[in-house]
Amino acid sequence: MTAFDKHQVAVFRFVRCDFAADTGVAQLVYAFDDGPELIETVTIPGAPFVLDGARAEAVQQALRLLHLIAGVSYYKAGVPDQVRIDSYAIDAATAALVETVYLNGLGEFAYRNGLNLRGRFRLPVEGAPVAAPALGLREHALVAIGGGKDSLVSIEALRTLGIAETVTWIGGSQLIRACAERTGLPILNIGRTLAPELFELNRQGAWNGHIPVTAVNSMIMVLAALLQGVDQVVFSNERSASYGSQIPGTGEVNHQWSKGWAFEQAFGEHVETHIAADLHYYSLLRPLSELAVARQFAKSDFYDAHFSSCNRNFHILGERPVNRWCGVCPKCHFVFLALAPFMPKPRLVNIFGRNLLDDADQAGGFDALLEFQDHKPFECVGEGRESRAAMATLAARPEWSEDALVKRFIQEIQPRLDAGELQVEPLLVLEGEHRIPAAIWERLRADFAA
Image (cartoon, rainbow, N blue to C red):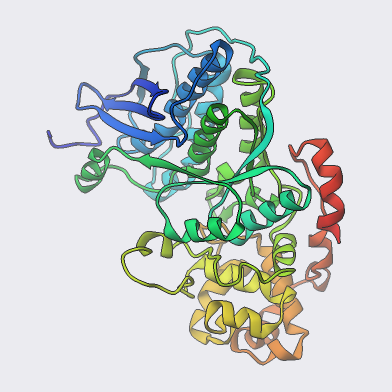
């Protein structure tokens, strides 16, 4: 392979995409300039699939949109100014959606690499829009599971409502599989294999960094829903996901932009207007804050020994036994803090294996969550005001107030804050825009508000 020079790449090409109904394997092919093909595969279990005319067309539309959105993993290696689609044409609405995903979903990547991507990624518009038909999909939800508390709250809420669901994840994580199996529900494990050449490009100095993986996973699950013939793709992104890190001199950079409302709204509407009118994409937790989700999760201890939101474990699980919580990353810090107001202290300490709030060495990590002398971490964690309210709640409880970081909060941080902004109750109110189907939301609201 010729040495890759990210500064010399001129064109990124969406070469072609195809789907084999007999095997369930989709191929997504990309290239830089006239270089070697980069081939990603996505494998949907359940083949062979029998696709009729309207559903076959919907699958084709979904496959192309997946090709475009998943290309973000490869485009970022060189971020050239020119982009080509070699084998099909797209309409203006599709181009606008994908361009938005690249610009905002690569926000953290651009910030960390000192790049300005505004106006850089532009797709050629040559096709005419096609109205999406209703396909007669059956009422059933593919629910994304990530192994953490949020998706488990959604899964149990849908179960309570009697909505048929299949617990779905992408990739080979054994931790996620264990959580999925714990639900006792039908499961769907989708395979995704990145082009191996991408890792070689990274070794040769390609641009690298965070991508909007939720956007990619959302599109993979839309394709899977069409193939399975079901009418709902459900994620578990709460309203706090729409709030990014406030960077002095830069503005807001949202690590989890594709978990936010702006993406959900644009993507969900596009699926219904361009792919299948009766395929509904939504987040069941959008009207909830992270603290409201934590309160809901704490109502049951059924998953205490199975769930984990620690991203570090997803890199190493399977190679050797590990604790499900590293205890030092922003996710561990936030989940511990968010759950603390809502569950007995011994239960929480037992989940994590130690008391993270009684470790003075972790002060910097919690300061970032509180947005005290630092900005919110580039991680999927709640808003600073949620962390401040949670900490203030613990400060008022004798069983927590003597712990090192809670005591520090009481002495050094709390006096600088407005007491009116440290109340948990206003953050537990269900509010804000969402795409939850009305019939589901009316029944769900009482359960979440209790």
